[in-house]
Length: 103
Figure 1 (cartoon, rainbow, N blue to C red):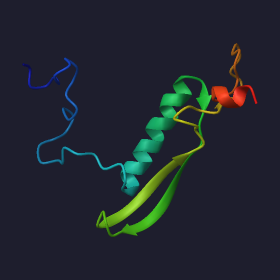
Figure 2 (figure 1 turned 45 degrees about the horizontal axis):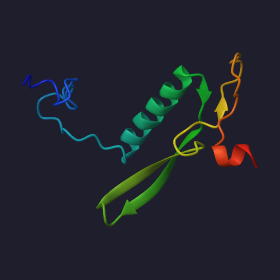
Figure 3 (figure 1 turned 180 degrees about the vertical axis):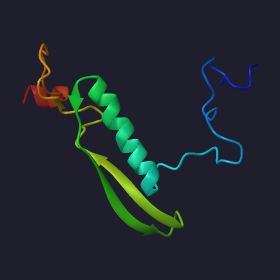
């Protein structure tokens, strides 16, 4: 098996790490939360959706033994709520779960 590929044949999860770097990415510190916010915004913007993502400083967490930054958004069940302005051609401009659509 190729060491740079995972067991499913795709690129390995940590193949972009430099020697001596941690293999685990921390999404809970301020820098990691900021990177995650940018990834989420870019992902949904490519698909024509507008997502509001906020970073919330949670302070020191004894269980984690470190400070934590929460990433919060206006998405519902991981799906954006509205299309970006100026995006035409959508028959469904907002996302609503099926239960709310009939209410």
